[in-house]
Amino acid sequence: MKLSKDFREIKGDASFRKFYRNTKKNSIIVFSNKEKIKNLLIYDSINKILIKNYIIAPKLLSQNYKKNYIEIQDLGKKTIYQIFSRNKKKQYLIFKKIINILNKIQLVKDKKIKNFKNKFYLIKDYKSKILLDEAKLFSYWYVPKKINKKKINIFNSKFNKEIKLVLSKLNFKNDTFVHRDFHVSNLIINSKNQIGLIDNQDALIGNKAYDLASLIDDVRYKTPNSLKDKVYNYYLNTNKTIDVNKFKNDFDILSVLRNLKIIGIFMRLAERDKKRKYLKLIPYAWNMIDSRMSKNKDLINLKLLLATNFPKFITK
Image 1 (cartoon, rainbow, N blue to C red):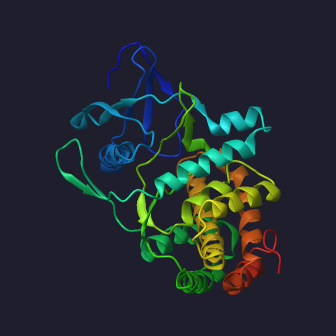
Image 2 (cartoon, helix red, strand yellow):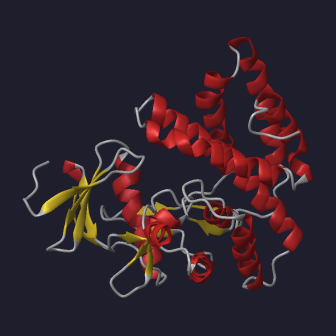
């Protein structure tokens, strides 16, 4: 792909995409020759649904799907992660604004929209099979590097059984718009000091607790338990009709499953894609898994299995 000299490549993320910024046009080229349906077509479809519901997301400016790219609005260079990295004083106030946006996202009822190829895209449900397959990334990529070869099959069999059991303990239905990667690195402050969402292509209709778990137990940005609790309680205070006990159960389970998935993904990035910088984040993912499992009786058996095989990270 040939671009004018006005475009500058942006440091990439953990995907197959490439990004190029044009500061003169206030636009970004998203290039993807792998998984292009998700990274281009579905990405724009989800953005359209968010924009329709008055949530800030990148607008489509142009597209050349045959040549594997779309051009979208540039929401800005400043992520909330970057703001927090420089100044932690107003963290809670900003988190409250983020929760208000999350509440708005969770009111989205649109599941279907026309994409730029003039065909309808329907957001799929976040079924238990998807959650199970995501958890299996842990057993496929991480486990073989850490467990004796003779024990791998036995562990994986027990692990799959426990994950299925844990999934059966979820209370809330798949009836809520779920971003699936809702954390401070994917939240942008625009020129009007408003918060916008990026990296929206993975959205599904799922459990109400998932995005809150993504935000609070974010492996990329460490927060003290006191702040985690404050943000969690603010969400509950803005959602008075939620069954608190059932919601906390789902929050714990989904946080654990998400961070197991992330450990698997980070090991895959290191082994397959030679992106080894993500390995340093794995101990914090373990820390959050251990913390959430210790507070939930439905996770006792999974905790015991992990503690037996990964005693360095999980306390018995």
